[in-house]
Amino acid sequence: MMIRISALSIPLLLVACTIAPPENLPQATSQAGARPVSAILYKQALNVVYDDKALCAATRPVAKSIWGSALSGCPHLHGFTIEERVPLNAARLPLQPGEGSPQARISLSVVIDDGSIVKFHAP
Image 1 (cartoon, rainbow, N blue to C red):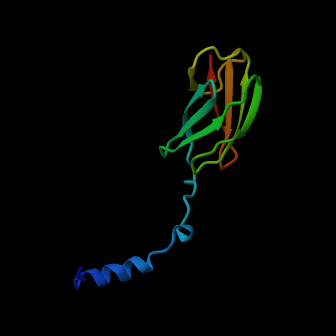
Image 2: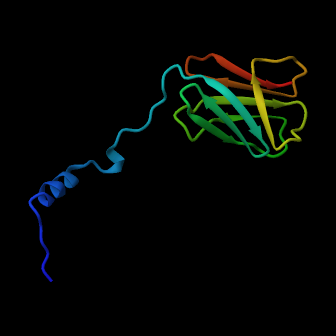
Image 3: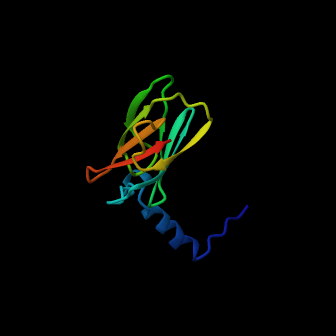
């Protein structure tokens, strides 16, 4: 069996040897000024979408009325707090932007890079 190496194969092999390994590639960084624009609370998770189209998530603990953590799975690892005044009976609850009334069933506060707080609620 004879293997033929063309003149084009050698430069391609040399280029392949010079590509940086994955651990040396630049990591994704947070876009400065990105703000949350929507949030959905599920029975087991919280999803927050940013104006740069990033989707961030957090695992929802079982049976806690006040909880918080940091978002993950995206470039925006912002901290958040949720207060559930009424248990969530729906499998999916889209939250509305803004603070809402003191009687809101659920309140979400996300602290973004500049220290300001973006709020969402479920009436």
